[in-house]
Length: 304
Image (cartoon, rainbow, N blue to C red; front, side):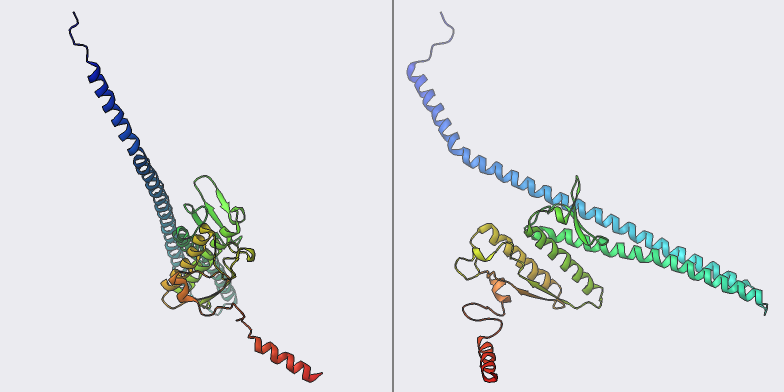
Protein backbone atom coordinates (compact mmCIF):
# COMPACT_ATOMS: atom_id res chain seq x y z
CA UNK A 1 0.00 0.00 0.00
CA UNK A 2 1.31 3.52 -0.95
CA UNK A 3 2.45 5.75 1.96
CA UNK A 4 1.09 8.91 0.25
CA UNK A 5 -2.37 9.16 -1.18
CA UNK A 6 -2.68 9.70 -4.94
CA UNK A 7 -4.15 13.23 -5.51
CA UNK A 8 -7.58 13.40 -7.00
CA UNK A 9 -8.18 14.65 -10.54
CA UNK A 10 -9.98 17.70 -9.23
CA UNK A 11 -6.97 18.62 -7.11
CA UNK A 12 -4.65 18.16 -10.09
CA UNK A 13 -6.90 20.33 -12.24
CA UNK A 14 -6.96 23.02 -9.53
CA UNK A 15 -3.15 22.99 -9.35
CA UNK A 16 -2.88 23.25 -13.13
CA UNK A 17 -5.35 26.13 -13.14
CA UNK A 18 -3.36 28.00 -10.46
CA UNK A 19 -0.12 27.35 -12.35
CA UNK A 20 -1.68 28.70 -15.53
CA UNK A 21 -2.84 31.82 -13.70
CA UNK A 22 0.67 32.38 -12.36
CA UNK A 23 2.10 32.05 -15.87
CA UNK A 24 -0.39 34.58 -17.23
CA UNK A 25 0.45 37.01 -14.42
CA UNK A 26 4.14 36.57 -15.18
CA UNK A 27 3.50 37.31 -18.87
CA UNK A 28 1.63 40.49 -17.96
CA UNK A 29 4.48 41.63 -15.74
CA UNK A 30 7.15 40.85 -18.36
CA UNK A 31 6.88 44.20 -20.28
CA UNK A 32 7.12 46.08 -17.00
CA UNK A 33 10.20 44.07 -16.03
CA UNK A 34 11.76 44.67 -19.45
CA UNK A 35 11.10 48.41 -19.12
CA UNK A 36 12.64 48.40 -15.66
CA UNK A 37 15.71 46.52 -16.90
CA UNK A 38 16.08 48.93 -19.84
CA UNK A 39 15.93 51.84 -17.41
CA UNK A 40 18.71 50.26 -15.37
CA UNK A 41 20.80 49.84 -18.54
CA UNK A 42 20.23 53.50 -19.50
CA UNK A 43 21.23 54.66 -16.01
CA UNK A 44 24.30 52.47 -16.24
CA UNK A 45 25.38 54.12 -19.52
CA UNK A 46 24.67 57.59 -18.12
CA UNK A 47 26.73 56.91 -15.00
CA UNK A 48 29.51 55.45 -17.17
CA UNK A 49 29.65 58.66 -19.23
CA UNK A 50 29.72 60.77 -16.08
CA UNK A 51 32.59 58.68 -14.71
CA UNK A 52 34.56 59.15 -17.97
CA UNK A 53 33.90 62.88 -17.88
CA UNK A 54 35.04 63.11 -14.26
CA UNK A 55 38.19 61.12 -15.01
CA UNK A 56 38.98 63.39 -17.97
CA UNK A 57 38.47 66.46 -15.79
CA UNK A 58 40.72 65.08 -13.06
CA UNK A 59 43.45 64.28 -15.62
CA UNK A 60 43.25 67.80 -17.03
CA UNK A 61 43.48 69.34 -13.56
CA UNK A 62 46.53 67.22 -12.73
CA UNK A 63 48.16 68.34 -15.97
CA UNK A 64 47.43 72.02 -15.25
CA UNK A 65 48.84 71.60 -11.73
CA UNK A 66 52.04 70.15 -13.20
CA UNK A 67 52.32 73.09 -15.64
CA UNK A 68 51.94 75.54 -12.74
CA UNK A 69 54.66 73.76 -10.79
CA UNK A 70 57.03 73.93 -13.76
CA UNK A 71 56.31 77.65 -14.21
CA UNK A 72 57.01 78.32 -10.52
CA UNK A 73 60.29 76.39 -10.69
CA UNK A 74 61.26 78.30 -13.82
CA UNK A 75 60.68 81.65 -12.10
CA UNK A 76 62.83 80.50 -9.17
CA UNK A 77 65.64 79.54 -11.56
CA UNK A 78 65.37 82.93 -13.25
CA UNK A 79 65.62 84.71 -9.90
CA UNK A 80 68.69 82.69 -8.93
CA UNK A 81 70.45 83.46 -12.23
CA UNK A 82 69.74 87.17 -11.98
CA UNK A 83 70.77 87.24 -8.30
CA UNK A 84 74.10 85.53 -8.94
CA UNK A 85 74.95 87.75 -11.87
CA UNK A 86 73.99 90.90 -9.92
CA UNK A 87 76.15 89.77 -6.97
CA UNK A 88 79.08 89.17 -9.30
CA UNK A 89 78.75 92.60 -10.90
CA UNK A 90 78.53 94.29 -7.49
CA UNK A 91 81.75 92.57 -6.37
CA UNK A 92 83.78 93.86 -9.32
CA UNK A 93 86.32 96.59 -8.73
CA UNK A 94 85.49 99.01 -11.54
CA UNK A 95 88.36 100.91 -13.13
CA UNK A 96 88.87 102.82 -16.30
CA UNK A 97 90.65 99.86 -17.83
CA UNK A 98 89.38 99.25 -21.36
CA UNK A 99 89.71 95.48 -20.93
CA UNK A 100 87.38 95.62 -17.93
CA UNK A 101 84.80 97.52 -19.96
CA UNK A 102 85.00 94.82 -22.59
CA UNK A 103 84.44 92.12 -19.97
CA UNK A 104 81.42 94.00 -18.62
CA UNK A 105 79.95 94.30 -22.11
CA UNK A 106 80.51 90.58 -22.66
CA UNK A 107 78.85 89.73 -19.35
CA UNK A 108 75.87 91.94 -20.12
CA UNK A 109 75.50 90.19 -23.47
CA UNK A 110 75.54 86.82 -21.73
CA UNK A 111 72.92 88.08 -19.25
CA UNK A 112 70.65 89.13 -22.11
CA UNK A 113 71.04 85.71 -23.75
CA UNK A 114 70.19 83.91 -20.50
CA UNK A 115 67.13 86.08 -19.88
CA UNK A 116 65.96 85.50 -23.44
CA UNK A 117 66.27 81.73 -22.96
CA UNK A 118 64.33 81.85 -19.68
CA UNK A 119 61.61 84.04 -21.21
CA UNK A 120 61.13 81.57 -24.08
CA UNK A 121 60.62 78.71 -21.63
CA UNK A 122 58.26 80.83 -19.56
CA UNK A 123 56.22 81.81 -22.62
CA UNK A 124 55.89 78.16 -23.68
CA UNK A 125 54.66 77.18 -20.21
CA UNK A 126 52.14 80.02 -20.15
CA UNK A 127 50.83 79.01 -23.56
CA UNK A 128 50.50 75.38 -22.45
CA UNK A 129 48.55 76.49 -19.38
CA UNK A 130 46.16 78.60 -21.48
CA UNK A 131 45.56 75.78 -23.99
CA UNK A 132 44.94 73.36 -21.14
CA UNK A 133 42.22 75.65 -19.73
CA UNK A 134 40.60 75.92 -23.15
CA UNK A 135 40.70 72.13 -23.58
CA UNK A 136 39.08 71.57 -20.19
CA UNK A 137 36.29 74.03 -21.03
CA UNK A 138 35.56 72.32 -24.37
CA UNK A 139 35.47 68.90 -22.68
CA UNK A 140 32.91 70.25 -20.21
CA UNK A 141 30.75 71.79 -22.97
CA UNK A 142 30.79 68.85 -25.39
CA UNK A 143 27.85 67.09 -23.68
CA UNK A 144 25.60 70.07 -24.52
CA UNK A 145 25.79 69.37 -28.26
CA UNK A 146 24.65 66.51 -30.47
CA UNK A 147 28.15 65.36 -31.30
CA UNK A 148 30.33 62.26 -31.68
CA UNK A 149 33.04 61.39 -29.11
CA UNK A 150 31.21 63.36 -26.38
CA UNK A 151 32.83 61.16 -23.73
CA UNK A 152 36.36 61.94 -24.92
CA UNK A 153 38.78 64.64 -23.82
CA UNK A 154 38.79 67.41 -26.45
CA UNK A 155 42.00 69.34 -27.07
CA UNK A 156 43.15 72.11 -29.38
CA UNK A 157 46.39 71.45 -31.27
CA UNK A 158 47.68 74.99 -31.76
CA UNK A 159 50.57 73.90 -33.97
CA UNK A 160 48.18 72.26 -36.50
CA UNK A 161 45.19 74.53 -35.78
CA UNK A 162 42.81 71.59 -35.39
CA UNK A 163 40.82 69.79 -32.71
CA UNK A 164 41.52 66.26 -31.48
CA UNK A 165 39.32 63.89 -29.46
CA UNK A 166 41.35 61.64 -27.16
CA UNK A 167 39.43 58.42 -26.51
CA UNK A 168 40.59 55.52 -24.35
CA UNK A 169 42.02 53.76 -27.43
CA UNK A 170 43.23 56.44 -29.86
CA UNK A 171 43.37 60.13 -30.79
CA UNK A 172 40.91 61.26 -33.49
CA UNK A 173 41.63 64.50 -35.42
CA UNK A 174 38.76 66.67 -36.62
CA UNK A 175 39.04 65.67 -40.28
CA UNK A 176 38.33 62.04 -39.27
CA UNK A 177 35.22 62.83 -37.24
CA UNK A 178 32.76 62.17 -40.05
CA UNK A 179 29.79 64.40 -40.80
CA UNK A 180 29.54 68.13 -41.34
CA UNK A 181 27.29 68.28 -38.29
CA UNK A 182 30.24 67.24 -36.13
CA UNK A 183 32.48 69.85 -37.73
CA UNK A 184 29.96 72.63 -37.03
CA UNK A 185 29.64 71.65 -33.36
CA UNK A 186 33.40 71.31 -32.82
CA UNK A 187 34.02 74.69 -34.47
CA UNK A 188 31.46 76.23 -32.11
CA UNK A 189 33.28 74.66 -29.16
CA UNK A 190 36.69 76.12 -30.04
CA UNK A 191 35.32 79.55 -31.03
CA UNK A 192 33.40 80.00 -27.79
CA UNK A 193 36.22 78.57 -25.65
CA UNK A 194 38.70 81.01 -27.21
CA UNK A 195 36.37 83.99 -26.80
CA UNK A 196 35.65 83.04 -23.20
CA UNK A 197 39.40 83.08 -22.46
CA UNK A 198 39.90 86.40 -24.29
CA UNK A 199 37.14 87.99 -22.19
CA UNK A 200 38.27 86.49 -18.87
CA UNK A 201 41.91 87.47 -19.54
CA UNK A 202 40.85 90.96 -20.76
CA UNK A 203 42.62 90.50 -24.09
CA UNK A 204 42.22 93.10 -26.89
CA UNK A 205 40.05 90.87 -29.10
CA UNK A 206 36.64 92.17 -30.32
CA UNK A 207 33.92 90.60 -28.15
CA UNK A 208 31.60 89.43 -30.90
CA UNK A 209 31.21 86.47 -33.27
CA UNK A 210 29.46 86.40 -36.67
CA UNK A 211 28.07 82.98 -37.70
CA UNK A 212 26.45 82.34 -41.09
CA UNK A 213 24.04 79.38 -41.44
CA UNK A 214 25.31 77.02 -38.71
CA UNK A 215 22.35 74.70 -39.43
CA UNK A 216 22.96 74.32 -43.16
CA UNK A 217 24.19 70.72 -42.76
CA UNK A 218 20.87 69.83 -41.13
CA UNK A 219 18.75 72.06 -43.29
CA UNK A 220 19.54 72.13 -47.04
CA UNK A 221 17.08 74.20 -49.12
CA UNK A 222 15.28 71.14 -50.51
CA UNK A 223 14.08 70.19 -47.00
CA UNK A 224 12.18 73.44 -46.50
CA UNK A 225 8.95 72.11 -47.99
CA UNK A 226 6.81 74.81 -46.33
CA UNK A 227 9.26 77.67 -47.02
CA UNK A 228 9.04 78.69 -43.36
CA UNK A 229 12.38 77.46 -41.97
CA UNK A 230 10.86 74.59 -39.98
CA UNK A 231 12.63 71.23 -39.75
CA UNK A 232 10.57 68.09 -40.26
CA UNK A 233 12.93 65.37 -38.98
CA UNK A 234 12.79 65.12 -35.20
CA UNK A 235 16.45 64.11 -34.77
CA UNK A 236 17.65 67.08 -36.82
CA UNK A 237 15.33 69.40 -34.94
CA UNK A 238 16.79 68.23 -31.60
CA UNK A 239 20.36 68.73 -32.87
CA UNK A 240 19.59 72.24 -34.17
CA UNK A 241 17.86 73.14 -30.89
CA UNK A 242 20.97 72.02 -28.98
CA UNK A 243 23.16 74.24 -31.19
CA UNK A 244 21.08 77.36 -30.55
CA UNK A 245 20.63 76.58 -26.84
CA UNK A 246 24.41 76.21 -26.53
CA UNK A 247 25.04 79.52 -28.31
CA UNK A 248 22.45 81.42 -26.25
CA UNK A 249 23.37 79.88 -22.87
CA UNK A 250 27.12 80.37 -23.39
CA UNK A 251 26.66 83.96 -24.55
CA UNK A 252 24.48 84.75 -21.53
CA UNK A 253 27.07 83.20 -19.20
CA UNK A 254 29.56 85.87 -20.32
CA UNK A 255 27.35 88.53 -18.73
CA UNK A 256 26.73 90.98 -21.59
CA UNK A 257 30.44 91.07 -22.51
CA UNK A 258 29.91 89.11 -25.72
CA UNK A 259 27.62 89.34 -28.76
CA UNK A 260 26.79 86.71 -31.38
CA UNK A 261 25.22 87.61 -34.73
CA UNK A 262 23.66 84.70 -36.65
CA UNK A 263 22.11 84.62 -40.12
CA UNK A 264 20.30 81.36 -40.77
CA UNK A 265 17.46 79.82 -42.73
CA UNK A 266 16.15 77.67 -39.87
CA UNK A 267 13.33 79.06 -37.73
CA UNK A 268 12.62 77.25 -34.45
CA UNK A 269 9.39 77.56 -32.51
CA UNK A 270 11.04 77.52 -29.07
CA UNK A 271 10.68 80.56 -26.79
CA UNK A 272 14.44 80.92 -26.33
CA UNK A 273 14.98 81.07 -30.10
CA UNK A 274 12.06 83.47 -30.69
CA UNK A 275 13.40 85.93 -28.10
CA UNK A 276 16.67 86.22 -30.00
CA UNK A 277 15.17 86.84 -33.46
CA UNK A 278 15.59 90.44 -34.64
CA UNK A 279 14.58 90.23 -38.32
CA UNK A 280 12.68 87.66 -40.40
CA UNK A 281 13.45 87.96 -44.11
CA UNK A 282 10.62 85.97 -45.75
CA UNK A 283 7.59 86.59 -47.95
CA UNK A 284 9.12 89.50 -49.84
CA UNK A 285 10.94 91.05 -46.86
CA UNK A 286 14.66 91.03 -47.65
CA UNK A 287 17.97 92.30 -46.27
CA UNK A 288 18.05 94.85 -49.11
CA UNK A 289 14.58 96.49 -49.39
CA UNK A 290 12.88 96.15 -52.77
CA UNK A 291 12.28 99.93 -53.10
CA UNK A 292 16.05 100.49 -53.04
CA UNK A 293 16.39 98.39 -56.17
CA UNK A 294 13.46 100.16 -57.80
CA UNK A 295 15.03 103.56 -57.09
CA UNK A 296 18.30 102.36 -58.66
CA UNK A 297 16.41 101.18 -61.78
CA UNK A 298 14.65 104.56 -62.07
CA UNK A 299 17.95 106.43 -61.77
CA UNK A 300 19.50 104.23 -64.45
CA UNK A 301 16.58 104.90 -66.80
CA UNK A 302 16.86 108.65 -66.23
CA UNK A 303 20.58 108.55 -67.03
CA UNK A 304 20.03 106.82 -70.38
